[in-house]
Length: 437
Image (cartoon, rainbow, N blue to C red; front, top):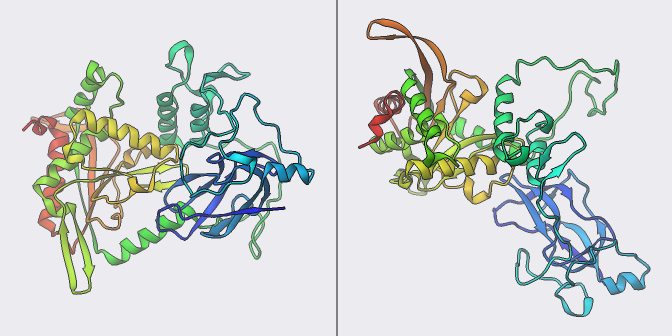
């Protein structure tokens, strides 16, 4: 019997290994070219691997959760004809699905990722709303997003037509829950005792071992590299953001932004872009070369947004953010945030950043000392926005107050530049009208 073996391919990220997260096929399944056979997680993204063969799945060579090197065998295939001769019954296929495009019914190997004109034998279900036994209406992608964000759909308030739960409903619920996640008391388990599998030489029940791999492995390596190679200096400023909150409220009510989710992060992003133009060194990078070090000043802003996702910390960036209007920037932030939370951020979206924003305010934090993203010279943190007493014209009044902090590479930028940049960001949040120039 002729067996084709598929090895883990290089998915174009320059990485050497990946974790096999989930199989989408089983032995005996009939597949066509470009059917998704599994999901792998690299240090940068979650990737679906398409089948380079048409035939019948023979054997799955790697278990889920195992990290394998590029080039390692992961699955075998045989042709349908040979499978039938050997008495292997292919799992039933959808009779309405079109036949495979390869001639002769043999197992055909093609280049990885080749789209061609191949037609999948498996017909994907229509993305129509599905009503569960408890009455929640939501499309399959929304249900998957809810699972990824650990959101119980029955607790989400639907805003879609006919009571359908939308993507924004799930994301909003997840954001609201994240603020209180650390202060909620877990429900007491009904089980009095349980035994968990533990690593050798670890006291049972007192600790557990979590393998460091995927995004966590890449993040830890990058943070150690940054912390011990770039001398960090952090500055911060508490500000009155009342006018920013007023602007956000007006934008939300504007028909021009009816289909766009608006938050104070949008104003913060515009402020960082504006302030970086006035202090270009915060948008620069320290580069070591064979002939010595040099500072590269970028005259464009690829704005990174640190995103806490179910897979770990990701920092995708908006390319050439300085060229975007307020509305286009808002749309880009929406797409970036949703893609990151779904775990679908591409490697290209995480490369080439020039300066980063981290919104620690969504976790209820006032301020922090963030670590610079490697390849950049600055990162800005936005704290929670809360009503506090504030002196205005000699009188104490309730105002919306936040803290803006920033960490910078002191090799690239000096104290006056850091302070001027943070002061500029603060001035925009205090008076967004300054953006109209």
